[in-house]
Structure formats: C-alpha cells, structure tokens
Image 1: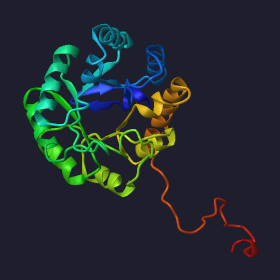
Image 2 (image 1 turned 45 degrees about the vertical axis):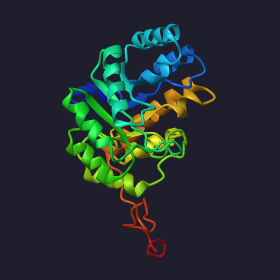
Image 3 (image 1 turned 180 degrees about the vertical axis):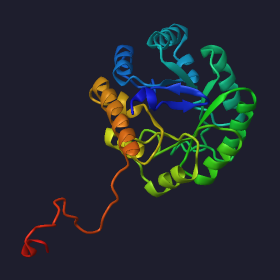
Image 4 (image 1 turned 90 degrees about the horizontal axis):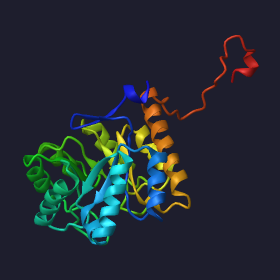
Length: 265
C-alpha cells in the first residue's frame, strides 16, 4: 500500500504524511526550512504567543517562511493556563493564520507541562462549537481522552512523555490501551526523542507523531527530520503488515520434516 492509498485523515482532510513538526528552537530559520523539506510533514505547528512576543518584523518573517513551505499550519495555544486565555488565543490565531485548525494546549502544571485535565474538555467543546478543528494535547489518561472524543474532538494528541524530555513512551500499557479503546486518530504529541520511539508507537497503531525538540535540538536537525520521517513510514508499514506473535520458546525456521530424528530435538 502506497502513502497515497493510506492517507492520514483528520476532520475529513487527507494528508500524505503522518509526521507533524514544531517550528521552535531551531538554530536558524534556514535550518528550519531545510528540516521541513527533509521531513515532508503533514502540518507545521506555530505558537502565536511565542512569535508575536519576538516583535513585528521577526513575526512577519516567520509567518512568511511558513507560507513559503506550502505546508498546512497548525496554530497552537502554547503558554495558556486558563480557559479564557486558550479561547482568546485560538480566536486570534484563526485571524492571523486564516485557518480553523488549532492545537489546543491548556497547561495545568508548569513543572511537568501537564495539561489541565479539568478545563481541557470544556475548552475543546467551546472551540468545536465555534467551528474550530481541534487537536487537543493531552496525557495518556483514557478517561480524559474519551471525554475529549465525547465533546466532539475527531482526533486526540496524547503525550508519550512530558514535553521536551525525549524519554520515549514511558507508559506503554496506557498508550496501548488508548489505541485499543479509542477509534479516532491518535497523534503522539511530546516526549519522543529518537526515531525508534516514533517507529514503536506507529507499530502500536498510532496514526501520526508530532515532534519538535527531538529534531530542533539534534546535532543535525535536517538529517534528524529525514530520519524521523523514515521511522514513521517504517512503523506504519509494519503495523499494516501485521507483526508475528511473540513466542516464549524458540521456534525453528527450518522445517523438521525429513530431518533425522537425532536432529529434531
């Protein structure tokens, strides 16, 4: 099955890539641009609050770079700690980026950057009713993710580990349970540090991954973006191919029929 035959579908929109990239912390705009070319992501996330804080000229240059990539922009509400902040930032982002896509981030703890699990579903519901295509950043908590689906989210973005840690999936049981129980697209957002991490979660059946720090802080971000893109494709292909069942005992790969009895045991 080719990539064109197996698109990522979010809110009825199809994407050939299952990799999403963040746009912060790169050594330079040029490196960011080349990383995007190497990774060929479906979407690029952008923080309105972060970019506007850098001044008008820098913001305009950044927004121009995003447009030149030709990649769909996914604005986020990074840095928001209250329901009002998140809603206001999302509405501003819709005007600036001229899109209904929004990655909803509503932080409840500054140390772990864990989302506010009490306000997140309410914020998602309000934005969906306002016409946004909401992709909510969440933990791997099944009840929270189910509530986000119940209020209308057509995809959820659980973390693998806290943002920026690069630890990879720290709770495989919870992540596998999410995949088994929820029927909407699941995009792993945060905590992946290595291409092998991305490959693993894709093998489990996750639909896509979103990366930033793992690429931006690599010694060679451009090469790392390409490596993650390859890992995502490999993991997705492996999932569709169907892996063999793990066995507790060794299984001979050579048939024993016709082999002398003293070689069979």
